[in-house]
Amino acid sequence: MDWITIRTFTFPQEAYFVKSLLESQEIPVFLKDELMVQVYNFASNAVGGVKLQVPEKDVEKAREILNENGYLAEEASQEPPRFVKKLMNFTAQLPLLGRLNFIARILILLFLLLFLIIFPLAL
Image (cartoon, rainbow, N blue to C red; front, side, top):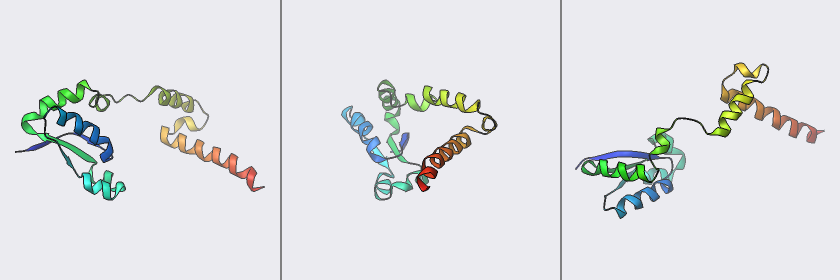
């Protein structure tokens, strides 16, 4: 019997809800790399996260159940949240910073904010 990965999670506790949902529908579930990530959380990215796997014969039914309950919808949408869009637009209008990528703009603004908070305390 071949096991197919239908969703990955960063931490095992995120996968437990989906596992119990599928098992309640009598679909066997295996969480690959679950114990590795439990022992050492930072290994999650290195091993590709916790992989939710189901038997090949149950893949379509499992995906249907996950889609109905909103567990596959977030992977399909690549659009950032509204707050992030507003932040991207605001920081793009800043002089000198507007030419940098979004992550660089945020890091520089955070550094400046911390500097303005810590510097007066040092005096």
